[in-house]
Image 1 (cartoon, rainbow, N blue to C red):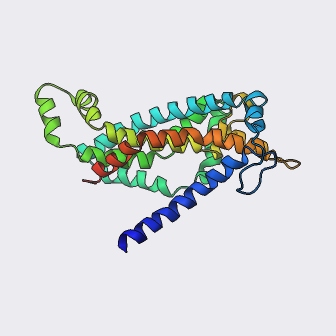
Image 2: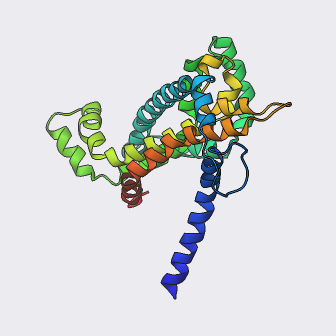
Length: 266
């Protein structure tokens, strides 16, 4: 009976998770979206229009560039701070960890005005570079704790042996620790990628030029005060979520293994 209830709960969670995606996917092929029934006539008008008229591939490329750049910057910088926190003893070490923790409780909307004003003064408003810098700072606490936990699970003897052989701190970190911590780095990068790819608020706030907009910000263009292009919106949603689904399915094993390994010490 225990296995039955376990599989029943998993089935319910799976249905709840898949239903919205399935509903949007089916309706993206209907002439008049609505309901979960299969369309009588499968149409590709929504997909054709977003690629020919809206040039969705341009928004897709913008999202890819911004997401990859911000993920690389965030993981690289945070990995350095996480390694120092995990391995070195210094004053205010616990304070730094606490400061990272407090960022988890700060809602994005509360920092939107300072960020908007700062980027305006720096001349980075409505630029990809400005959004990359903002995205690099979002979610750093989660990245920090994942990497710190993984660094703590690596035996110190490996690093001590590298230093005996003449490696300095940077050499030990880049040549020894990072290769060992690849699963943890991959997990942090996956989570940062998914969060940055799906981010809508700052993308719609900071980017006004259509040629610089991300694909998530594009979704807001389908609904106006006078009309709703549901067919095009559903097609764009499917195109938007495809990369996240592909990334997670391809790297889910690495994701689970690294979380388990990083939980040995914390």
